[in-house]
Length: 241
Length: 74
Image (tube, rainbow over all chains, first blue to last red):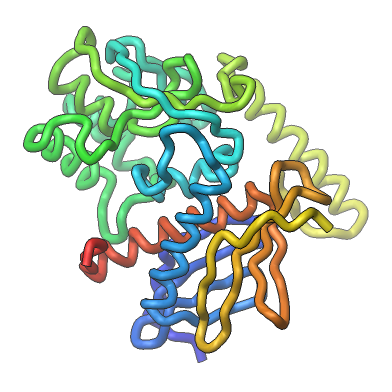
């Protein structure tokens, strides 16, 4: 019988197999890898997470990089690119020069003042409240998260605990830190210069070369449609790439 | 198989000890293959796949510490 009090802690897909880590209240931490389930005590789970962080640092081996310095929820989202990370540097950038990727109906690159977080801080919270795919801490709303970061910057400054805005290679396109950047823009204005962290990838991999990502999104949708159609005709179910 | 390089760490589940083993990449793209193995079995992952798994555990740990109010420094 399944436990009704199950909290999903984190999930990902590895090679098409779903990985889920759940807290089953009054039972144990369940680690699901496809159809396989392993039950862990909380102590075992915490120990495994620590040992894996150590191992990940050795595997990445990038200069000035310690995986524990970063938000693990961000790292979980971008984990596939970490193997290509070569080094991390600190730079300074004017807030007006920062570029974000917006994912509404179609993905587009925009200046930071178009972010849903900045709009929310300046009085229009519709986009932020309707953004349902953002992963927050359990029980935290999008607005609570944003206000928490704003309060933290007001009280403790930026960067706090080495939590920098992260940019890719030499470009000013954000990888992480849109909330922090939006709060800084709200507090100090577009001419303010802030320290940022740059992730340098091998051969400048993950540079933005396609400034119209919606073209790629439409292309992917068409390819998926055609593949699913072909799959259905041959008797299979729906697939997604 | 990819050449064994070294053990990265050891983890214990119940009475079973697993090794996280670093190997040169053999049958996948990437620099390394990672084996999580005990005497009776093994899971083989590419370096990218292992990093996905590791960061998933780290994200889960952060969530657990947050809502159970566990102090990570204790």
